[in-house]
Amino acid sequence: MDHPTLPAADLRQITRRLGNREVLRNLSLQIPRGRLTGLLGPSGSGKTTLVKLLAGIDKADEGEVTVLGRSMPALPVLQRIGYMAQSDALYADLTAKDNLVFFGKLYGLRGSRLQERIAAVMALVALDDHLHKSVAAYSGGMKRRLSLAISLLHEPELLLLDEPTVGIDPVLRQSIWRELLQLRDGGTTILMTTHVMDEAEKCDSIAFIRSGELTAAGSPRELMERSGASSIEQAFIAMGEGVTA
Amino acid sequence: MRTRALAYRIIRQFLRDKRTLALLFLAPLLVLTLMNFVFGGASPAPSIGLVTVPGTSQETVSQQLRQAGATIRGYGDSKSGETALEHGDIDALLDLGGAAPRIALEGTDPAVSKASLGLLQQALSPGAAASGSMDGKLQVDYLHGSASLSSFDAFGPVLVGLFGFFFVFLLAGVSFLRERTTGTLERLLAAPIRRWEVVAGYLGGFGLFTLLQAALIAWYSTSVLGLYMEGSFWLLMLVNLLLALTALTLGTLLSTYAGNEFQIIQFIPLVIVPQVFFSGLFNLDAMNEWLRHIRLVMPLYYGADALKGVMLRGEGLASIWPDLAVLFGFSLLFALLNVLALKKQRSI
Image 1 (cartoon, helix red, strand yellow):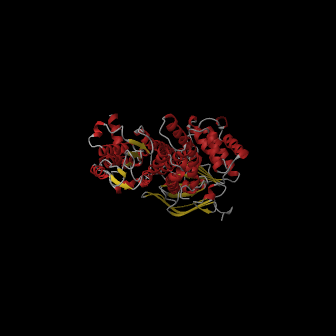
Image 2: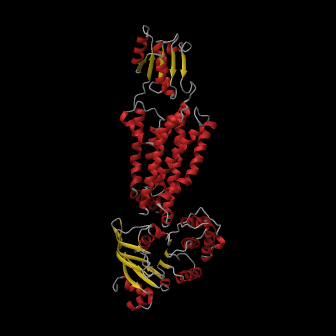
Image 3: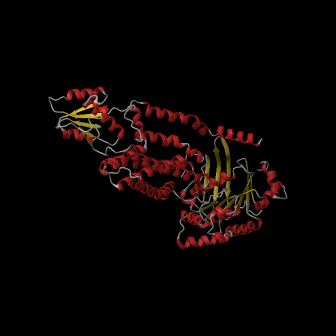
């Protein structure tokens, strides 16, 4: 069962096929609890598939996925996970508030608690002035932030963010990073995919993934030392081939 | 240059979408085949009941009717003949027991009524039917409807069911599809919601609108269009609602197998049009018995049957409940299949 010393998520020899293509191949990875882990890899490398396996909306063909002590997919675990998809899954014909209320209720929030949480997460992503606007009128960056706000609504223990900062301007990106680090300090485990290298450097640990295989994992410092590179970007290029893995 | 590139791209897309390609070539064939079955058969021969008194000229009448292609059934007295007419065993009853010949018609299908009446008139007075001289002497009664029942009155109940069904089907299909293509379904399923809760939620949300639609259609067809209506308005609404519920569950189920809005449209000739043919809009009595059984798997057939019962024959719940039960069963089945189909999105 779940225990604070166990990793928040544990992937053991995962293989996932779509058609006859292996999107993930015999991949093993542990997501340490209470840390911010970055998943780095070129597009098409299997990052999103990995996140979906953790989110319980996809199932591995081989291997085992354990999240918060439970073998996935398991319905009760979903309550403890916050998921932000790569594409903004929002109802464009509704207002931001409608969207928040809908998803909040899916996670069992209601009444004054729901109103409190909505106010809190919208302040966090600096959208409090646009609460009653129709999502169709939102810009791309605003939609991204609303998606993030929705994933934070029910205060999940594990936050899965698929490309959370795409399309968000540098100033706001920085403030979102501040909040993510604050959430981490409060005990939330965060896994995010990115291909922005300077973001990767802020992560507690990094996993490099390429063509569905894990090529390297460790803290940014470790990875740079191991590859003898002076930046994460160089480390990624060096280790991306799987030489040092 | 750009035009050619565009044309090339569209051709490529078509070639990649095997189903659209199949629709383009196979669906017209299917529809033509069905139309052949429906219209290609011989015209229906009415079955006529004969109430006779021994020792009169009934033999000649019966023989003439038989020669004209009618099926004849004999009855000993007026009462048993009328019972048979009510049960729909015969289309018309010729009562020769009284002082003057009396004709009673079942009356719900104007085409059959007309055919029966023509045959009877011819048989009773050879040569007179053409001049119409028998009209005055013959007493003609209608069990349902009247001489003024138009084709539209007879088709009406079927059309009421058909259009309700069609639009709910399309709407439910497209909106559930959108949920999938915009990624909101996936996001929805990342929450701890059960698959049946998703299906039930859709039924609830749409159910409200289908209820409104059922009420509107029932009111409009009887009050505004003035369709022939013998039965209860509430029963009419109930049938419409159950039919819409079937369309709703079928639409959402089939949307699982569509990749875009266009592919939903492709279901129309495959799912809707055949049901129209078999729903009772056309008389299928002349169709091959075996082929006619196809209608037993078509929800619209049961809906239309119940609607005809309520509107044309004034039937109550006691006689249409089997139709309603089948519609409810269809809805339940489609909803359950929907829950299973959602496994494609999330395995738990």
